[in-house]
Image 1 (cartoon, rainbow, N blue to C red):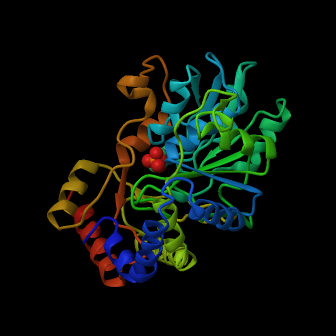
Image 2 (tube, rainbow, N blue to C red):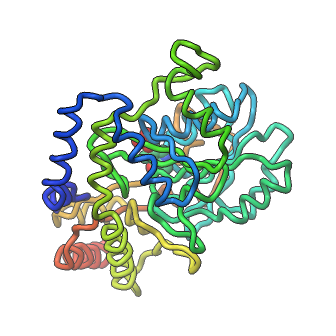
Length: 364
Ligand SMILES: *Cc1c(COP(=O)(O)O)cnc(C)c1O
């Protein structure tokens, strides 16, 4: 059983994706070809915002979002310590300072109740992460940001593209929404890709310039930028994937709900999904005690697992802050384990996962 079944997905979409790739090979506009704009229009409509700017990866999306906000060395960006390193990496790359706020122990998203205390006169952005595919408390975060001089809010939505929040869509909830099309994300390409979303015309224009080395016109470099475009072939792949994306999201919600229901009563903690939003389960993650033994038993039963993430960022060598402690992030890092999840996971496969987990928990 694969951890994420991209082969079945390709088999279902093969003729459409192949045709779109062939079309790019035929027209030869490998950089900024027509598929780039077509995808940006489709995605902006999907999210319900004015602008989508495709970029080279999710990491690049976060970096360009911060560059467009003119972040300076020493500026502070508030985020969560329990995320993929890219979230904090882009802050550090700009010489800015990550300021951490602990997570809610049940949802693993940034605890908005702790946010206000972390704001200082140097705070230049707030970057919550919609972890595992569940949108963070964006309304609360936006309201606090607005009260403190309209601090820009960037949703790291690398795991939550397609998720709903109070009838709206992830990526369309704050100053910037940033997502990733890494193959294993809910909407993936066949390499690296990402996108930024905003309703702000000036920010969108800035991002479009930054992704092509800060050019406002050809060979007029008005700002410091990056080589951050998403290539035409990858845009064509995502266009192909959009053909059944709504079905895939519905499948993910269904499989996630079925997993959650079947795990009821077992000695583990399920992720809390708030009633006013859904979770698209970029990772289907639960929390267990004695994780190493559970993971080994699952491995022996042929069930692939992964740990998202084994160490909070303030405990990683590159970002070590030994003086700081975030008890919920630290506890989650010791207990989380992710199970196989993809839209093509059959009920028989789901049952096999649950049965193996049940045995693993009984044995440990
Ligand atoms: C995957 C991921 C990223 C980075 O996306 P890439 O496309 O791999 O660069 C950033 N933040 C989070 C939370 C992610 O899961």
